[in-house]
Length: 263
Image 1: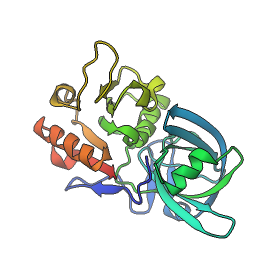
Image 2 (image 1 turned 180 degrees about the horizontal axis):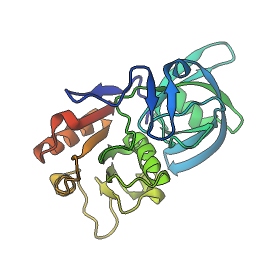
Image 3 (image 1 turned 45 degrees about the horizontal axis):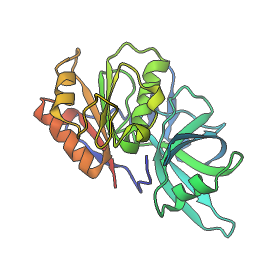
């Protein structure tokens, strides 16, 4: 996700998957809150270009105790003079990527931390990370998931999609992802039949151009898997409001919509 100072969280009566003392993915991952509070050294090992303005940064974190898809971490940079800058970033990597985490960052104009990553960071550089943080937006893989994201809002949703594929989960998962055009579609090469891409300004020949609409949302909700959908929406404030209204209008219960927004 881009440089949110703290991901906003919106919920209602439905309790999130957030045990009081531990986070857990069925079958494997258990992360103590004590570990999540400890700063750890993260060494940059790889940089992958996703779009002209977005790159993925892969880190080796030997002491990383695991995370739930949808969680984020706190990253800290320290300059030579002791000045520090901290940001929250969503985790793009799946839980099973042991000892590593991946962050996908926009190059935000004037962004202190994202600017450093996009212009100066090189493999071998060391930063500090702390987490995972927040169980509200996490998806443990135990319920049908309808994921809706725009721009870099797709980052935590990709962690969920990768987890779904990596574990070969049979629980239904669908992803609606919005981008201005094909060249700005983050993770474009990774999407499959579970994904519908919506282009707001430029689209391949034969593909309509326009905002996310009921035409994309309503058919997915109409599938009605056993137990119904748990909806996860991530993007800018404006997109989050728009997408959540579409969901409610199509019949999604308000207390089963989880929102993470930025900007």
